[in-house]
Amino acid sequence: MGPKATACLAAVLAVGLSGCGTVVNCVNVNGAPARAIYGGVRQDAENGYRHLGEAFSGPAPSFSAMPKPPSVVSDLASKTFCAACGVGMLAVDLPISAVADTLTLPITVPATLMKQKPKAKQKPRKKT
Image 1 (tube, rainbow, N blue to C red):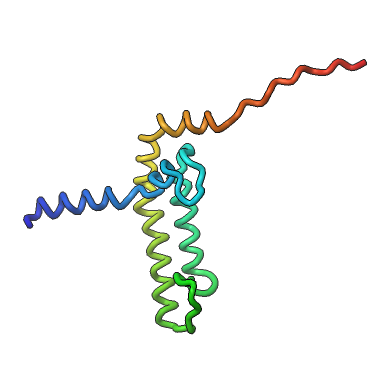
Image 2 (cartoon, rainbow, N blue to C red):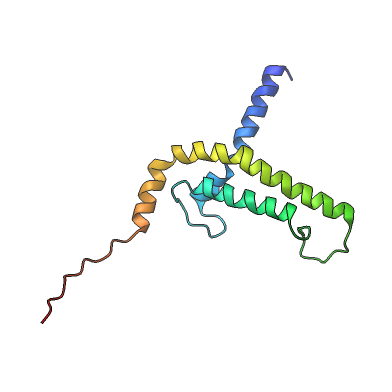
């Protein structure tokens, strides 16, 4: 494969694998409110900071429901993986989600406005 084809493939994969927050925002995954204005950016920021928190504070996260014996090597690998995911979400996915969220504003703004029900106007009561 030539250098142009490799660069093109890398660009397609980078775009296809990024902007996940916007995809989650538009399809209502994991019970998140669907089609919120800049919901993809919000999702990426929350998940990125959560992963960084798991990496740098507290015990190593477990990716399995099964209990495992403590191991310095596996704990370091888990924390490194969480740190890489957090940095990747904040540095790569969040900016792409910002662009994608901007492009999806014509969809998310009406969806957000439809979710907000107008409050019924109440007539002021006369004091007697």
